[in-house]
Length: 173
Image (cartoon, rainbow, N blue to C red; front, top):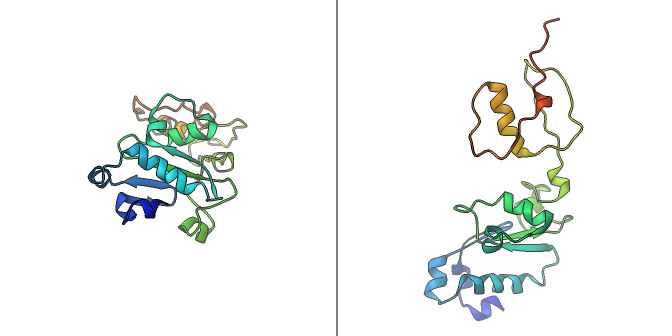
């Protein structure tokens, strides 16, 4: 449908990688295609793909709209200036067919709990051994490392210092 309606449809994209789509906005404009129309075309084309769980577009991710738990995780990984136009989220049990993750059996992660709930380990000679039995977030890493190394964390950091990682100087016993 997409290629039938738009000859040389591949020119509409600057990049189509695993789960990210970047439109060529100049090409869309030359062809009189609105970004919203392009969103719709991609969504309709994707309807028959059984590996896709959800598709988010730039407008959704920039909005205040509640996107649910998975959508919020996608939103938190989205960069307004550098992010793509659309994000294709595979089902939890799938990789993008034909992509490097499918060939390698792994990827950079998904917004699902199985990829979000991973160990965070600090190994530093001046820290005592310990474990945290609660969930922490990757954004907690930067302010915690800043405290460990004695530098000031950037003011715009979302995370919190993990006090469990700051057990004090290791005893010299």
